Length: 130
Length: 130
DNA sequence: GTCTTGTTTCGACAGGTGTCGATACAGCGA
DNA sequence: TCGCTGTATCGACACCTGTCGAAACAAGAC
Image 1 (cartoon, rainbow over the protein chains, first blue to last red):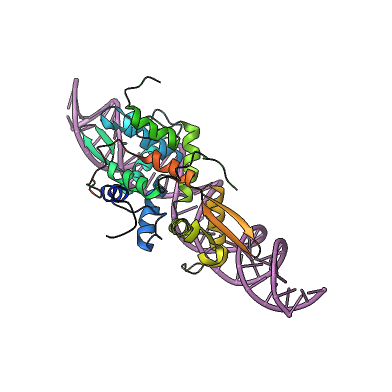
Image 2: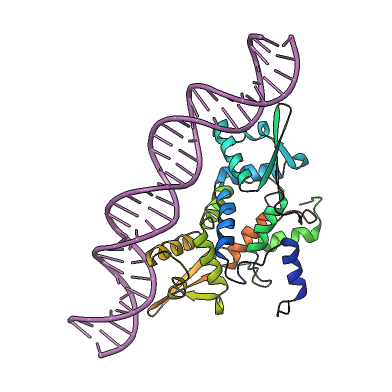
């Protein structure tokens, strides 16, 4: 616990659970686990579904709220929701006729903090590349 | 510009470029763009490569530093590096015989802030799910 | 020039993914 | 009970992806 890392910076990690991947090489198993979560985010429909659920009133949404905004069929939406659920990004529950989905913030926070870069490199130069 | 969002919370977004996806539904084009970046992160080998590059001394690594830790062939590593580069996550440059790769922090920061959940829901309950 | 080493590209292949229509299942109300 | 509506599963299909070995390309050494 005696690093050259400022205490406040470490506090974030403890709360969020993980050290940023830019600090030390990712363990093989951890990488496999994280890759599964990122794979769930690697489809535009799923990304929009997740965003739609999270920003929905009350923090949860019925499947019936989610099929409208998309050009794909209902079974396809159902498939994508399953992928998100199995990746641990959302939870779901049936209430009577309808099934509701909500985001699991801990999962997003885990990924967010993993991708965090050291303060200072926050980079206003987004988009510049080689 | 007159939201009910605290000024300090918005400051983060400005620096990082984007509003978290849990705040409002993702635009269709934006989602497609982001999905491309997440897809680059959706493979364990690429995740480890990225982490290896970022945490390497000097913030950059030669390809020759990157082939050792993996069980896959050198052309496969080269392929994965290309995917990371085309996703805008890393930059590269040839210097004499060797080719060096480095992480583009702006890209990681963009994704990180996108996944950020509202303060308070940071959730110490990671892993709990339905 | 030729050889050697580091890296990328090519062509091929097995396996995975997104999509659909059809169908099955779950719960409600008549 | 039957029928209706909301959601999940199934089976099929085109397409994408990760992997390899072989070959090409780049830069330096001889």
